[in-house]
Image (cartoon, rainbow, N blue to C red; front, side):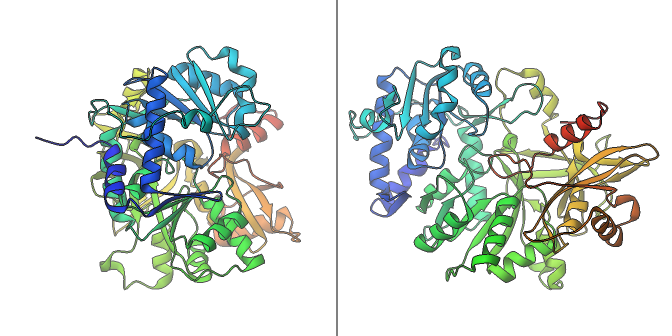
Length: 530
């Protein structure tokens, strides 16, 4: 008889083999895997008492806490579906997502309750709101008081099938409403096996939750680190100081984050030089960093840099950019350049870069096409949105909307989102390439490049720049710097200096806000791309 690939098996394994080992540190609290499992069972019993059954949706609005982590397994034991909510949305966004998903129970952290309180009456299906770390002023059910009413004895699980949906993850839409991505137990289970292999996860690892658990590469980690009996360190607020302190206190060996967060750690390291004596692997997902960025991480911090690529719709990871033996003899600078790329397909993933009519691009690092994925991780579809599902998954291939090239070694390099490609005088310009050059300037802390209108060329690159402290350079200086480093048609033609760039909760720069701001302030309505 075949055993279905369902996620509660991962916690079962950890309890069986690592029951007395530290599983989770959260604030000043520490729990073994047996104790974590007991809390998970209490949660499952409590949810059943509230009437939650297989297929029901249970939503979470919380930072990285023990309560968020145990939610995954507590919800899954009932065969229910977890709906993790982005903590940086507006109350109106939560109304849409909670009503669209038809969530019956909402768990919310006290620090985020103010986002729900004003719209409670608009929630059509939520029957119970339960608050983590509740204060005396909040008139809702207190999570800990509620939880202790239930037994920690084993929970009689629902009849789970590996093709059952277990996660409903809403992508952050920039126009219209977000779409709910349906991921199954099988999606997550096989993705975990592949990821733990490529990231070399073991029972010796101590994993620091920097990426929010609602994020594309944040909710995968509760599965493969738990399966291996690794130790989880929960961090509610991921400031550079808090990250380094947690790394020192707990001997953290691996952490995942966005490039902008890693950039803030490099800046903090420059100022404070914290000392860590353990080996560290840092996993980066997002825009391809410049090779100089990789060099700084490996030579200054002494950490191993691992670039990965994925998206919510592919559960998420599909590519990894580590150095394989056959190219290990390349010069170090060339290896840094390769490590900065999205990489080659992970086990179980078929990833290609195709031109308009479906033929693959040449492996020359120049020809650009769209990245498409066929894998065990491709979503079941969008919740209650069959049209969008058919537009995204065509002939079995997930069309990512990312544009890329393939080099002679088979490494894919993401050159831009379709919407971020700048078309100047008929030439395609990668905003990521231009940003990579700007990051080489010693006075620039952060940079984002967008397309702006130009009478002669149609569009040209425009940079939004955050300077380092006590630096004073002009727009002309930056334009000249980019012209020295790039072909002239790729160089920026203008610069806007800002104190900070708009970012998502995971630290990804939101170019849509920069585009809308620029085009709106200049009286244009032609290319409000999202």
